[in-house]
Length: 468
Image 1: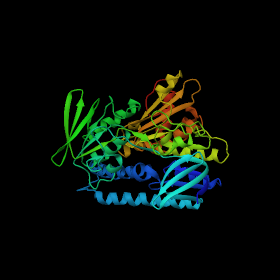
Image 2 (image 1 turned 45 degrees about the horizontal axis):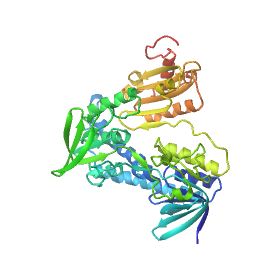
Image 3 (image 1 turned 30 degrees about the vertical axis):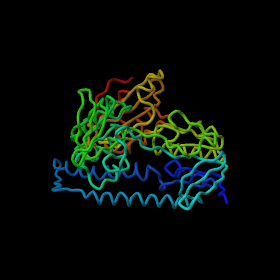
C-alpha cells in the first residue's frame, strides 16, 4: 500500500530536517526521506566536521606559538587518530539528536532515494524495496555535490573531495589544493598548521574570489606565514603517478610547473543534486545549471512542490537553507510568507572572515552614497591580550540616513561577532544606534561599536577624520 502523507520532504540536510521539524510543529503529517544520514552534507561531511578539525589544528598551532607570553608547550603533539575519533563521535551525537527531534515532532523518517513520479506522488527506493508515496505538498532540499574536473576524478585515496579530505587518518606530508575558495583554504589552512606542505592552485587573480579584497589581505598574509605556496591565475592540467604520490602539472603565468604531492584536494565548486529526482514528471523547472527555480515563497513551477537551500542556488550555506526551509514550511501550513532577509556568511580561515548585508561596492553600484567606518583589531585591548591583532571591523552605512547597510569582520572569532551586525541590518539600525549601545570591555565586539563611531568621525581609540 502507498504511504500517504501531507508533506514529503526530500533531503535531510539543514534545510530539510529543519523544515520537517517546523512542519511537525505546525501540525502537518510529514515524511522526511534521505538516502544518507540525517543532517546531510553539512553535519556529516562539511560544516561540523571541518570546524572540529580546524579547531583541533588551531589549538596545536596556538600552543606552538605560545612561548612569547610564557607558555612552554614543550613537545606539543596532536594524536590525529584520536581527533578523528572525537570528530566522528561529535557528529554521531548530532545525528542521533536530529533523529530524536524528528520523532519528538511526529515526523516520519524513511531511509531511501526518492524520485517524483508526478505532482502528488513519488517512489522511494529503500534497502527493502520500492515504496510508493502520495502527498499534498513536497519540499525538495537535496543540496549540492562537489564538481570534478578533467584529469582529477575523485578516487577517495589520492584525489579527494572535501569529504575524503576531512577523513584522512593522518595529515599528508604534501597537499595540493585545486581551488583557492572557501573550502579549499579552510582545509588547506588546518593541514598547514598540522605540518603539511600545502600548495594552492587558483585560477583567478586572488584567493577567495568574490570577497572584498580588504578582508582577504590578512588571510593571504597568514598563508605566507604558514608556508602555504599559492599559485594565482593558474590551472591544474594533469596528475601522474610519481613514487608513492602524484606529480601535478599546473599552468601558471610563468609557464608550466610540476608540484610533487601525496594528496590532491579538488575544491572548485559544487553543483545542484537534481539528476534522477523525476522533476520533469512533476513539471518542476530548473535553470541552465540544474538549480530548481523558485519564487519568494520557495514555490516551484509546480504549485504544490517547493524547494529550498543549495539546490535552488547560491549562496550555498546551511543557515540559508534552514531559513528557506522554514519559509516553505510556513507557506505550506497556510501562514503568511516571511522575508528571507540578508544572508550572513563566514569563512573559517585564519583569521576568520564574516559579513552580512551589502558591501561598499554593491551599495555604490546601486547609486547609494555611503559612509564607511573601520576599526582595526590592533587597537583592541582584547585582541592584543589574546595575541590576535590581525584584521578589522568594517561598517557600511547610507550617508543620508546613516542606516547600516552591511558590516563585516576579519580577525579573531569573526564568525561569532557577525551576529550583532545581522541584527543591526535586520532592524535597519543606524550608526548612532550601534555607537550609543554600551559594549562590554574588554571584548572583541567593541570593534563594531568603534567602527560605527569611526563612520562619523567619532571613534575614541583611533584617529579618524572629522564628523561627516
